[in-house]
Length: 327
Image (tube, rainbow, N blue to C red):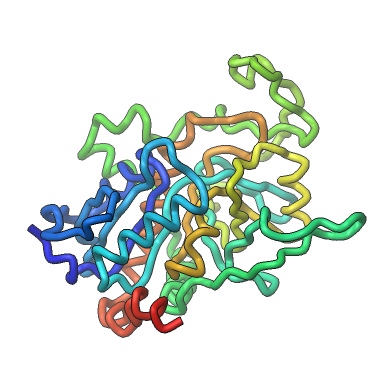
């Protein structure tokens, strides 16, 4: 059995698909913990990536949103009191724009922009007629050690490119049963539609059959990274974003790159970095076909990021539970 005191990095997933991807990228899986808090309802996987001991938890089946994520983080800190930094890794909806060529399978990493800490809670604020949405609460930015690692990894990728797709394929070779759900789908299924095009209600037909108005986008050049990696604001709320008009509004006014449903519940209680693989475009054209690969891409990036951080840097961070108890 594993000693809970040995784990310094907490990794949270929102759903089983993300949990499978996270587990797949562990270099080594450890035994179950020796002890968990009596009121801790989380399911845990313990393991190692490089020189770091990682505890991974997932939200309960059928539960999503800010409060559920906060509850999972709180229980993790009760059972693993030595956790010092956090990661929220999984899938999200992209917000492509003229500035940001976001495609399915790409990765968005939460980084501070325009006075915001990296995560923007878009259902906590006020709307005033003829004015921009005004947030009335502020979320913390990711820990410095993670933001520094982002800069280092960004420079590494810019100089040498990345091997994320190769890493994913390596996992799928070792675990062939995952191929059907987690390998990269055919690029022809990556369709972005004009903002005003809505998928017919109660129509389960594929968008290629039911919808018109697809936007033409050039293929990525051979020297462009694929999947692409984007750094900036992730919008978080308790509701699923499926409105292309609102998506584009937040992308234009706040340079939001991605929408998801959990991160806002963590930033002030569980200092972490949010990493999202893009599985749809936050509109009515839901695309579950890309969820597995997007989860793999986010987990592959998280593993590369941890490789930039020396364990001594993690040990130098205060325990999250101590930070919270001291206010």
